[in-house]
Amino acid sequence: MAKRYYAIALALALCLSVVGCGNSIENEVQEAAAEVSAKSEQTALTVAEASVDGRQDTADKAAADNLNHNASKQDSSAGQNTSNASSKTSASDSKEKPSPAPAAEPAPEVSPAPAAEPAPEVSPAPAAEPAPEASPAPAKPSGYGRILFCGDSRSVDMFSESADEIRNEIHDGIPVYCKNGCQFEYMVDAVNEYGIDNFDTLVSWMGCNNFGNFSKYGPYYDQLLAQGKQLVLCTVGPTVDECLLDDEDYLYYPNSNQINFNNSLRAWANGKDVKIIDMYSYIENSLNNSGGISIVPTDGIHYLPQPTTELWSYILSNLK
Figure (spheres, rainbow, N blue to C red):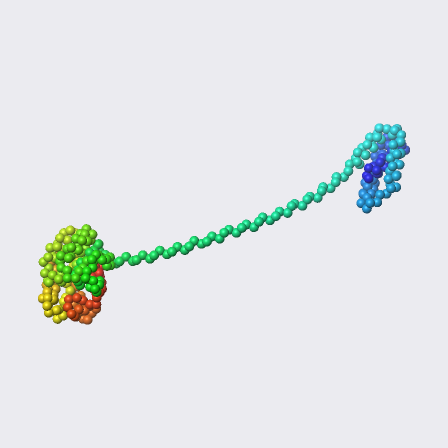
């Protein structure tokens, strides 16, 4: 549609070029062409709007055709200058406005990333079972190294009310050998069985069944001292003559025998590095003063209550 108006402008320019004269023709043509071009652009916009509604002005079309026909018949005398001017004008006006860039297509919707699967729950480690409590180590007297204990029936009564013998049992960390009715030889056998190199100190409560005779004990204790052993010796406990049986017990276990044995023990230990635990005085004081220890009324030799743990505790207390 714009090209038709360009032709009309060209025809008008040619007509003006014929009427004009001299060198001013070219200038006048250019000014006329510019004016027509501006009007043609405005008209083109109006026509474009009319074309949208589907209405075309046929009269304008006929006029344009007549102008084009007359323009082609113009005298060529207009010269080369007029041709150049018209060609420049048509070349300039023939440029179409650039079409608007097509609307950018909307970016495709991005699907949301699938939700991450939750991490599997980690089962808590089972609580560690508490370590079993260790049994407390038995109390062991200090200062005497490894201890071995030997005794007769009164010693058995300290640990049991019915046993006849306790052989290599551990009590408060101390191995114990004791037997009913035993004499000196039993102590020697116990030391040999346990092993002379396996203890440092011998604790002995022997002598009641030797009927007051200490003669065998002295030399043997000397041997142990010579081998570097320590000795802790308990005096023999008292008997109660009024409770002794009228047969052998009365002959062999009178309290006088206990006193004789203890006197010999003290005499031998005098001047030696030997500890004496006075069990005789401790028990006699309990018997006379209604203490925790009493005598068996039917034999006058053994003590009550059995087991006589009080006596064992007294020995341990003297080892500290």
